Image (cartoon, rainbow, N blue to C red; front, side):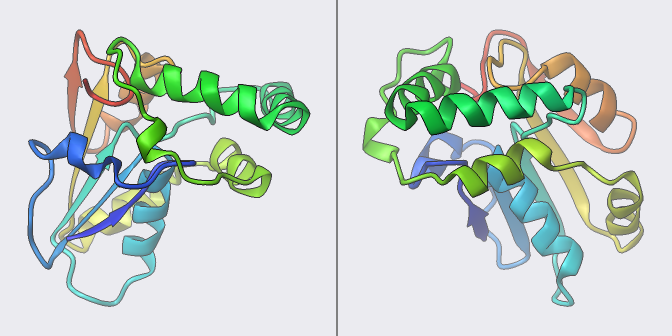
Length: 169
């Protein structure tokens, strides 16, 4: 299985053992990594049977001012922004994600926040026979879980966990 990491993270896939499938024909990604995994599968000419999107980063319902504000906060104090980000990713659990911290960049954050999930691309993958599964937590503090559910549930299988957050814990 090919796995794509979330923004400013590495090794966090250990939290998703129950959702991931060990297969040469499976691609998965968490949050920002879900965006990267999706684009990888879309552009791939190799056989891929399953795409697993774990708490896919979904910000297309936000105004441009939201993106500008996030980027301004990140540029002003990267350390404080990252600390709060990790707490929000882990919420409602108290898991300390510092051991999984990887250097993020303002460019990656901007790409993450500006990404638009393309309905036509999703439908094309489904037509190619790729099974897409989306896993989300209702108590997500990173994305609007209701808006994500509204978008993805029209297209594919979505698992919404009531008492879990972005990390699905």
